[in-house]
Image (cartoon, rainbow, N blue to C red; front, side, top):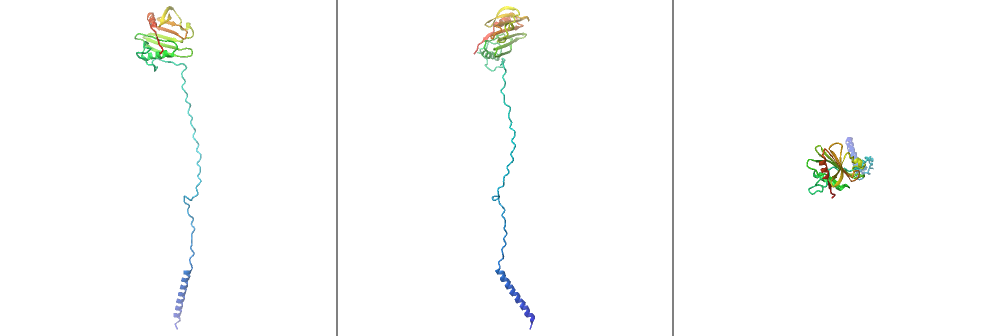
Length: 236
C-alpha cells in the first residue's frame, strides 16, 4: 500500500477543511468600525466674539483762543482837511461856490459850516492864490477852524471860532492899532504888526465866536479889501 499517497490526500483534506472553517469565520465576524472624532474648526459665525481692545484715548489738541478784536481808538479831536472830505460834492449850485479853491475845497467849507457851532467864513480871492491847508476841530472847549492861503511870498492865515480862549490880549496883540476894518459883514480892529507888511484884523478875540485874519507880504489896501470880501457859508 502506498502510504505516501494517502498522506498527501490527508494533508489536502485537512487544508481544505481549514480553509472552509476560515471562510465561515470570516463571514460571521463583523469588523469593529473605527471612527475618528474630529473636532470641527469653528467658523467666523461660531467663533466667540473677540473682546475689542478700546483704543487709547487721544490727547486733544490745545484749543487756540484768538486775540480779541479791539475797536480802533478814535482820535480825541476830529480833524478835517479840505480836499479829503467825501461829501457833499460842490457844484455850480454849491452853497460855498463863492469860496476860492477847487470843488473839493468848497465841499470842505460846506461840511464845516454844517458841523461847527459858529458861522464859517471863507475867502473870495483873485486868480493866483491857492488854499494850502484847512482844518477844523470840535473839542469840548469849543469848535475852531483854520485856513491858510498862499500866492507867491504872500500868505493869509484865517482863524475862526474858539481858537484862542486864553484872553483877548493873547489872541490880539495889537502891536500898532490902525483903526477898524471889516471881516466880511463883521466889524473888527485893524492892526499893523511889527514884522513889516503884516496886518491883522481881530473880531471878538478870546471868545468861542472869534475871527482873525493875518496877512503877510500884502499891502494894507489889498489886505483890507481881501478881509472885507470874506463871505459867510450858509448851513444847509
